[in-house]
Length: 305
Image (cartoon, rainbow, N blue to C red; front, side, top):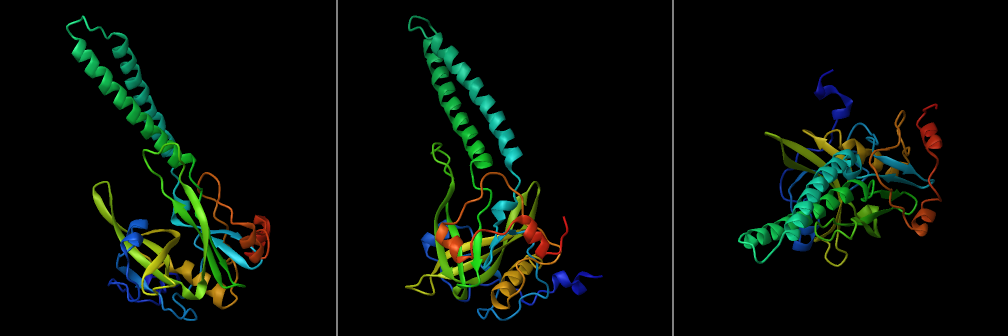
């Protein structure tokens, strides 16, 4: 079967690749995300009764299912970086130890009466600065790999027709005593969400390749044409975004057409390391209570365990 006839590529949206038809992006929004001000590759219609894809799929992005809500993960939850970040932390930490040992030796041999005192002093200063830099770098990679949230969940409540998500606390290199994570939970109306896909160019080795992200945007309640929130969902698509839009179609059918919380034969996402952020009790209560067990969800998908 050719790609043109394959149901997974049955996208109902034309390529847009032009300035956003609805939103303007202020500087604050541009700084919060790389997508701020980027021309969308495809634009979903505001009327959410319209289908955007012939197929619906959770695309290995469903984190949990509640009685009245589903929780979808973000691209951050698909990256398996724990091993690499741990390796970087060990190697750079070893370099920090070597420079630290050199600094200790240089300081121990300092003697104003020796002719090479100035050289030893310079080596002590340089080694100390290098040791501190590599130590902070090792801590940075350790924090990225093991102290960041496993995923950034987004909750879609079809009973209240609301979407809840976490704000992100960015990782900063020099503030090694602080951990990146999630901040407050924000809730917006599903009816006010605007779906977009974006194409980004990434350099991987010696070649450039295109990646795609699926995002939901909300305007400022005071100035509707100014984008206030951009939330990415799902995963990072490579070379095309047709498959990525199946996730939005799954969410759209769930919210608008009483569609299933999980498609037949699909499973919950279990990638990433670290803890999964927990929504406040009031958000969980509005979703119909705690999440269903994994076995129950897989039963809804027709999977026998």
